Length: 393
Ligand SMILES: *Cc1c(COP(=O)(O)O)cnc(C)c1O
Image (cartoon, rainbow, N blue to C red):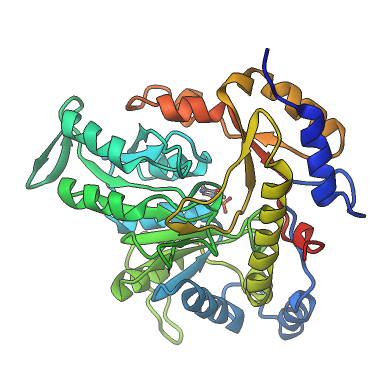
């Protein structure tokens, strides 16, 4: 019999987050108590609601300053940001791109939008993200490094790129992955969609790849309604990103000339106005989210059958979505736990289905995925909105 103590888990959730909060509690809700109304009103009053306006420029500068990445280009959503970043990293049709099997579907969709093929990689129990050491052994067995890059010996295709995803905000072991990339001539593009406010060895995530991306979807740490950003320390790539995502129009007073097949991926000024107000509050959100995770950690410490997942030793995480990990022996009772916690007004959710099991990605190449297969049965996300940390001194 499994030792999973569901009653104690519900009680612990109650002690951490029940204090006068509304029910049912969502996993992650936005919080608009800063300058959101003022900035949005300013957009409406000025009629600069669309693709031109001061808030887009301001938002991009705030993102670059906060993350320490030289340039940020704001776009309509995280998926579009990743599509663009992969194109700028020279992902071409027929390439294979290494993607963790355990991630949100958008990571692999963006690869497919480039005409490339997701190649699924296993996870690291320490981070929940891609495992660089296992990847290294795998590449040694299946690939060959040539002057043209890393070639998959079995498919004959180029493995051009790897996308580490900082799952639920927990940073991947980026130094180890960078070594693998160097050895195998693979470009790194970071999917930091969930990791605004997360640091790897003291440096903000998104600084380690050739390019990286953020998302400002409604459930992320900050939101612009919908939105995303491309980050890069390469000023020329950033300029090209701006150009291509804004229809590739050559700036001119009246002429309408375009020099590439561009994309209309620009973030409207109205959304950027929300973003500026949210960025002002980000340090506070992160502090509250940290308090919340510390309270969870204490509350779950002595409960049998589970472990509260904490940041890897080399990282400071934003704890975007808090995770409890079921012990292997308790994983068969996962659905019972989901059922009962939701019944009690606590929104809980399992991890995404592994992407290699989805119909559109079923035929894609994959390495041994035993760690991801094990984790996916054991991960439970619990309510994580920043304002839930308010009551914890
Ligand atoms: C949210 C998210 C995205 C995509 O962002 P959208 O803004 O929803 O398009 C990409 N990757 C990961 C890992 C995400 O969590």
